[in-house]
Length: 311
Image 1 (cartoon, rainbow, N blue to C red):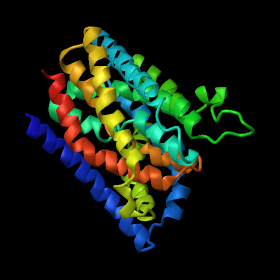
Image 2: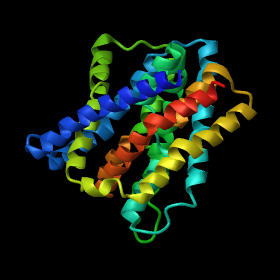
Image 3: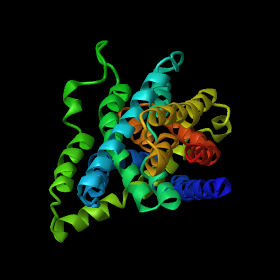
Image 4: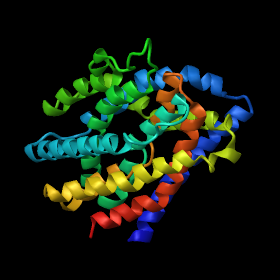
């Protein structure tokens, strides 16, 4: 089972990096450059990501059991982010601010879409996917509030976080649209739903191709000697999921839900680290290299954490 989980995780990472390689080649051949990718970033940030969130709600069937499962998944996802924020707080205090915020963000936010959902489907089936989909809600709420607060540059000594960003941001607005659709089982007309599905399908390939163009501009020789990226990996892939797993067991979460939440907690650094970095003018090289290193290491750590949750 452990080797099977390793193979599944490795396959997901391999698929991801084939798409990244396309972006890398596109930048090197000037077909789609890093400069063009920066211009595309707002499309991903403001349109594509919200479509993914709304689609995730419309795909769920509402009943009492599913609603309770969604609440437990939401609670579990909230635990993941609160624990990650608290544990990572003492780290990354020395160095350039544009790099430090990347490490802080990367220690908290995991790839709960591309990596988690396919892995949950392979290991746990449809029930696992449903549980993990619930984690997308707190992920987006935290990313578009706390995450923006980290990434947004301070002005006149004030924090980058603004109270209005707690409500007026693509992530929270999308949840506000999607949640009533789920609760009241509102079926959108095909003429509206199909464009949402098509736009949402752009998320992974567009993000990965963009990531590839950014990676093309980095010094790959220096990537694997970036010490703080390994600290991010230690926090994100081992310490945070281990603490979360302990909390889940203490509050009585077991079985499929425990494994699903553990998969979510142990995911490598989120792809949208680069998207947020670009949006707020942070260090794209650090973001790209950190995602790459943490994702490679996760091939071994994720199956290990899954095995622990199933003991």
